[in-house]
Image 1 (cartoon, one colour):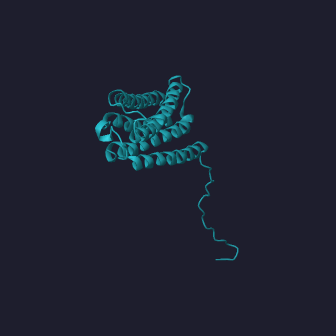
Image 2 (cartoon, rainbow, N blue to C red):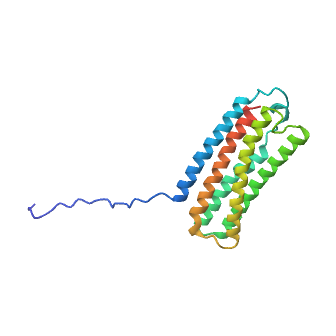
Image 3 (cartoon, rainbow, N blue to C red):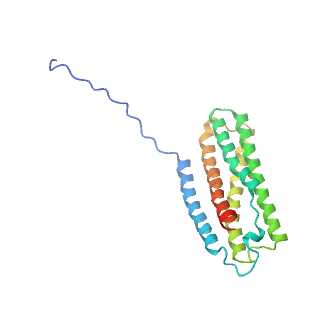
Amino acid sequence: MSQSEAVVIPQAPVEEWKLPSKGVVGMACLIIAEAAIFIIFVVAYLYYVGKSLSGPTPKDVLEIPILTSICLLSSSITVHYAVSSLHKGARSATSLWLALTVLLGGIFLVGTGMEWHKLIVDDHLTIRTNLFGTTFYSLVGLHATHVVVGLIMLTLALIFSLNGKMNSMHTEKLEVLSIYWHFVDAVWVIVFLVVYVFGR
């Protein structure tokens, strides 16, 4: 080989570094903050469970909300399919999956309202009755508030989808919303276990 001949070593193409989505980063920060709040409420519930000086107690009045829990957890699947459908440009399928998500979340919220009505009217458990009532309504109410916020945003997304104002370019925004909804569902698993399984 002569000195004039150079050895060429193939190099892998350099990928351009891309900043993460502002929406995803913002939602991640929100979820971290919200998770800290939920941890405080869960710890408070666990600390005070069984320390009420008067009744009713959790085992006296709480029934395990199996149906509504299944509905809420299933809504994580439907919102995933909504994002996937929007990514593929299937607007009608996106609307259908969003509608199912809103319906399932709505069923959960109605179930929570019915449970609270029974606890307040029939069992006379209010937020001021005892420590159990205070921590129960605080923790479950905090989660229900997050469900309401999520349902409002999902309903708006559904309206935009039905009006044809949502297309595949909006996939990232819907995905950010779905991350919030997955968080709400994941928190419910913890609340369900703490309040209705271990706390009884």
